[in-house]
Image (tube, rainbow, N blue to C red; front, top):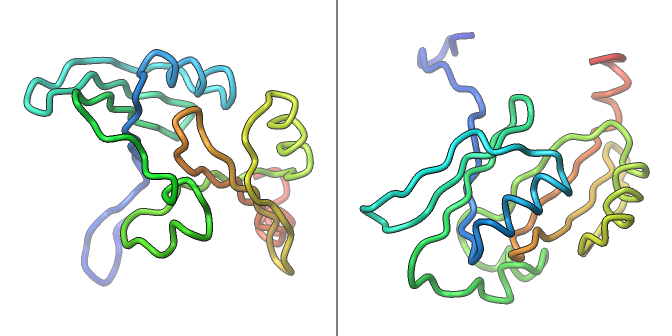
Length: 148
């Protein structure tokens, strides 16, 4: 679909995270969220080992760069991270927040904040490296698009 304003066709492709242990993160995303490795390679210019994970149309790119600094604690705190400019988190839509949160808890995922507002339910959790991820159930969206 072409944007009538500027003619740029934009679609989601991926989000990227820097992680300290690529193998552990690939395993975590596979076992916790159902992503599978689409490809892996070494990027000598960074230098880093890189993997692209995929689940349907969703992709997560993981980088394990050499000599990287650890994630500052404030970056994995939902409220505190907002005080630093830059990317905050990635959000994935779910149809049933209660079921998704229950399953994450069953898998011992670090859920840091969840709730329900007038139009949406949400849950923030951390991946195995501390990166923030949000699950988002936009209540009227699923009601308006039954079966979508």
